[in-house]
Image (cartoon, rainbow, N blue to C red; front, top):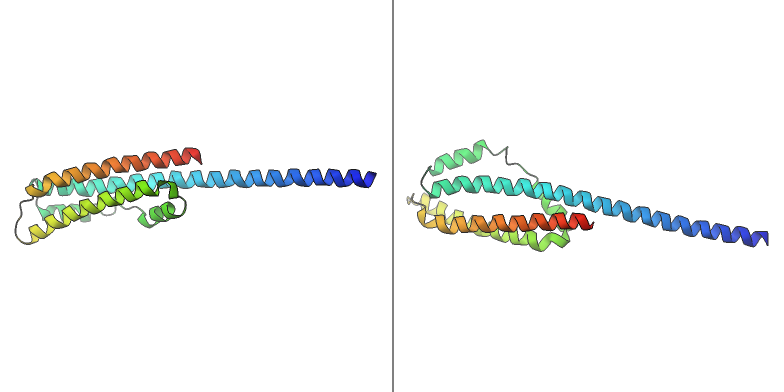
Length: 164
């Protein structure tokens, strides 16, 4: 009878230990996910701020308040200030941040449009047409879109971090 008691006690202890280890593993996974989302939030903030700085300066070129060369000098001078680890940002989104991937892709889509307008303006400038006023309206609208989508992405990341 004592063997049966020991066996039942050991079985219960083993079951409890398995439950405890499983619970601890899940807690660590949730904490890791939360940390990744927090890091992603900071990386996205830096990235969006860097984009805004460059695009706001280009905005001044399109308004003909500064020339294109001044814009390029500004970009070069502030290159270190706008550094962010974009590869890490993308890695976190693609590995840990799949729930926020649609919002991230939406920001990338908006950035692509903004870059296309910027490239058109640059081609015109290189061709000798220094006026950028025809690009100003679409450029500002695209800037607003990227800002709005960026805010949606940040909210999605914060929400995912809270759920983690």
